[in-house]
Image (cartoon, rainbow, N blue to C red; front, side, top):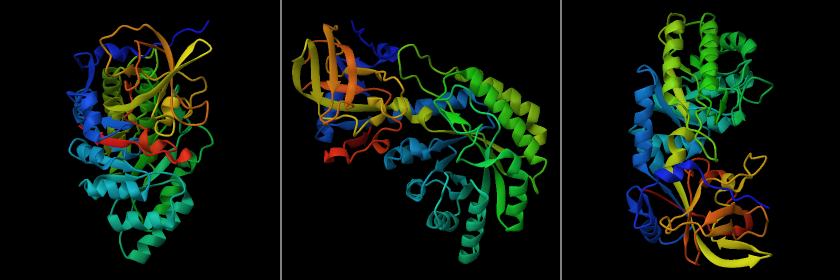
Length: 411
């Protein structure tokens, strides 16, 4: 017999009014009416501001906070973060333009990612942002664009260290990787940058993402600062900045607990104290995406049909994996688990059974929630997927089967 899959414990802390989910203080149905249709992503600006404030309170005062735009590049979201954080990290020329349009100082924007194209490097030089170079060839290309434009190029070296972020949902270092330059080759790369006349500003050491284990992040931060101190000793001049990445995760599934941010911040302060002299005057940057915006997002989709099949109830909705690939389980999950999902207009009603909530696509992979405990459902009910602020809209195959794209609003 199948066991119902309950949603995440965050459900107990949801804001409601008359049994309806509130997002940014407004009823979900009202927001759907305001947008004009579903499916719909809603992002809560107050939740983003509160998350930044919590980070400021726990991290050492000297640590600067950057938002990784790839987590959610909606222009209104980026513009909101421009007034909250110290800088942006971008992963494409289009993201760079969004960052600049939001009013962020180019001096506080960095550009990461492997296989940057010549046009992207040229745009970065023209904009005056810092390029996190990930290969020796990229250094040469960047220098060529700087000479052609007769402008200075700003560069940091992305390091592939010999260690990883243990338990990370996505590992980005510690083994053969397409990301960065192996730590053993960094001294030579620094000399190459100097010979090419590039303005070497610092290092970018990013080990992994989506980690809920404070002890793993603490260890990775300590080893990152130790490595940075050793490389600083071999640098041609003091570094301006050191980006130590992030990796802070948010809970999605039953049994997962929020990251102990206070423990991470305290240990980071101790590690900085040990290595401060060796790091000189380098500014310390923590770069976060999902942790800043993930829990501030909601995906709303409406039930369009109900039917039974061999004793199981299926609720068809107007959205699905083409809008929210990660929720469907097809974005890195080995064994699919439900995100926290609620019936947004029936939060006051007790569950009466289970339902499989599925989308409109012609594939059995189009699952919104599997064997979810639900109240009595009706066509027109509003389904909400929580934890949907990061890697939702832009990380999904929206052109698959050519259904309409979802809407996005910030409240």
